[in-house]
Each structure stands twice: as C-alpha cells, then as structure tokens.
Image 1 (cartoon, helix red, strand yellow):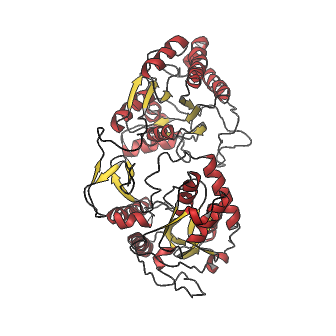
Image 2 (cartoon, helix red, strand yellow):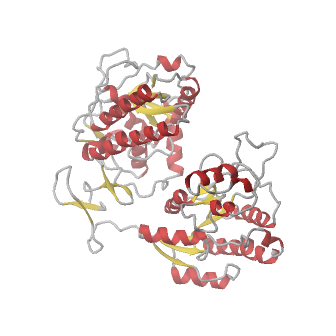
Image 3 (cartoon, one colour):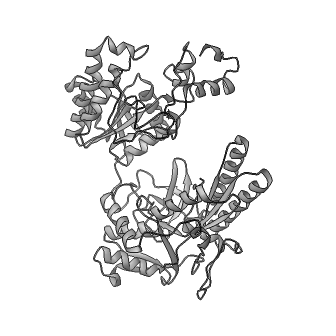
Length: 538
C-alpha cells in the first residue's frame, strides 16, 4: 500500500518541486522496485479526490471513477501524474495495481498542518483559528478508522486495474468545521475565528460518488460529531506528540526541505526559527544565528547521556548523535553503582538518558548460565538503579531491551502471522539471560519515565561487526531455522532518537514488520554478499 506523499496544498504553492520529487519520482521508484521483484500481488496506490479538480457548487452527483482529471494546484497535479505512472505500469508490465481517490481524512495522530488538528491545537492554546478567504469552501471529511476499513475492503475485494473512490456525501464548510471545534472547547466562534488571505487558488468543493466501493460492502460508520470528539480527546491527552509545530500552525505555512527532515518557514510570526531576505514565496531562507535576538525563548537543545559505549548499539548511538549534531556523553559509572551513576547525571546534566548497556554473554548467552550473579547485577539491578535515578531527576530513560522473551505457543503458533504484542506477558525462560530481561521489563512498568524498546535479532549494513545477526549465523556450523522478527538498526536507531525528542514512554516492539527465517537470511547472504557461501553446512 503506497500512502507516502507530500500532501498539504499550502506547502505545494511554496515548494512545488519537492512535491514533484516525492509524489511522482518517488512513486516511479517504488513501481520500478515492485516490477523488479515480481512478487507483488497487490499494489494499492493512494491518490486523492483533488485530482478531479473543483466540483460545481450545484452538482448533485459526485465525480465517479471515470471522471476527467482536472487538477488545479501543484499538489493535485503531482498526484494525477503519479496515477498515470501507476496505470502505465499496470498496462505495460502487468503490475497488479489498484488506485484509490479519497476525501479528507482526520483523526488521532495526524500532523497538525492539516485543518482539523491545526484548529484543535490552536483552540487548546487559546489562539485564533485562521480561515482562508470567507470559509465557504466545502470539504468532505472521513474518520481515519472508516478509511482504514475501506482500504481493507479494497485490498481483499478490489479488482486489479480499477479505481475506487473513498468518500462521504456529508459535506461541511470550512467555517462550520471551525465553529464545531470552538464549540468543543466552549469558545465563542465570533471572537475565536480570524479570516486571512486565501490561497492562490482554493477549490470550492470536492464531491465524490462512492457507490462502486459501497458495492464491495463498505460504508461510513463514524458520525462527524463522534469522530471530532475522539480526535479532540486524543490531542488534549497528547499535546506534545509532534513536538514544536508552531510553524505548521501558521495560516500559510511554507514547508522547506533541509538536511534532517522537513521544516516550516515561520516568517509570518516573530518567534519563527527562520527569517527571509525578501518577501517572495520562492525566497532564500536563512537560519537565525545563535546571537540573534528573538521575542520568544529558544527550546533547550538536546543532550544525551548514553550507557553502553563499548557495545554495538551504544557505539552506533554516539555516531548518530554526531551526524545529527546532538550533544552527548557516554556514562562513566558502573550500572550497579548508584553513586557513580548519580555523578554522571550531575556532571553531564542530560535531557535524556539512553541505556544500551547490558550483559548478553560472550561468545553467546550461554555465558550467563554460569555467571548468574554478574548477569543480575547489570541487567536487573543496574537497569533499575538507572531508571530510579532518572525518575528522581525528571529524566526520560530510553531503555534498549530484547524481544528474546517470547517463544511460539498455542496462542501464537509458528506460521500463523499472529505476533506478540507489547501487552503480552513474556513466556520464554529457556535462558537465564532472557529470564533477567523479562524480569526487569516487568519491574520497569512501575516507572513512568521509561521507554522500553524490544530489539530482536539486530542486523545492520556493517557485516564486519561480530554482533550483527547476519555475521553471527553465517559463522555457525548449524542454525535452528525459526522465523523471527528482526531489528534493522540502520532504520530504527534514528527512530529511537526521534522517540526521545517526543518523550515517548511505555513498551515498544522495536522491530521491522514481518518475520524472516534463519535459512532465508543465509540464502540472501549467499545470493547478494558471498556467492561461495556453503549452505550445505546448515
């Protein structure tokens, strides 16, 4: 399912080339990769209702799947262009493509550049809700759970080569959305809504005919009132989920592509993190220097205290911090020595603590069976001591744990596709190492300042590292061929830093999707890395 795209229309007016790069070129890359593998049974391309262009205000029948595509802004034009590539790959190469065109989606977790989360966050902050133009533009909104159900229906029942509209006939003016949000927060719409300049072009209405999808058995289930209430409740309970989004909350945000991700040009307000040297939309944007004065305080910079310097993950975390320009220091104290850990915290004064230290055993976990006291000292006592000190100093501890605390059972049979969730109780005590890790994970649940990341069979692009799962099993004489989850460190370690930025907590299965068997790993190793690798040894 291809959901990835730059989607915010406002941003496309100020940074249209990035939309071409992501939405058209990115889709082309993905199509080519799917063609090469020859293993894709469904390619669901997620497009938008905006490719149809503006619907007449008095139209009583919506655009159907065979309607002409008439995009009116850079965003919708790139989505229409991507659709043409999808159709071409379906016809030229037989790729099993299906395209969806949906109305606006809203719900929890949505980035606040979108209208509804933007209005909710602004209302929470007591600020004005900006309306483009007079607010008479009409849009249709679908709650995210209903849209997810639609994709499930299309995935299993949709016909290859077809297009499906995902829509609702319940339309709302933008100003009515703003009033509904004001009412949720008991605010007066007359004083809370502010009318601002309109977009360069703002389609008046998008109206879809969704009968084709209805015929497959899907229908909208969530009322507007219920969906808006659920969305509001989520944002009020998670106000800092997205971090600093002040730039996205501007009436006319302009997205800028810079090293390290997307940023927003906040030159419309005094507390912007970037200033411009002219008033054009396509202007050069210059970072505010550290010596520049601003009217609002700067957010404190990150500083990480990392334990596990000599370990694989701990070492990689340091390199990532250097690459991202994050200040960090490695802890000097012993995990079981509370006073030395306290000294580290007092001297470094970190914003976050990363615990990648632990006893895993050398050359393997069998070492822990004959060194139980040492294993408990670090894996249990040390981890709890660090968590307790972090709690005393109001610090979040990112704790790298293990997924090696589960084994297939009657509720999770091998090959069933039923995986263990974060809420499942550990059921594997076949090694003392796993027993200590399961024990400390259970105890850490009592600490609300801990984010536990369950790592499983870690691999990376560094095949020289002896801790790399690929490297380890390629050196074994025999392996047990069991499907396992894996953690690709190149992809997931940067996410752990982002999770720290967002101050996330709780237990997370820190693995990539799906499973892979040990034999499958070795087969790929032979095919792509070492053709002369002897599989007969397995």
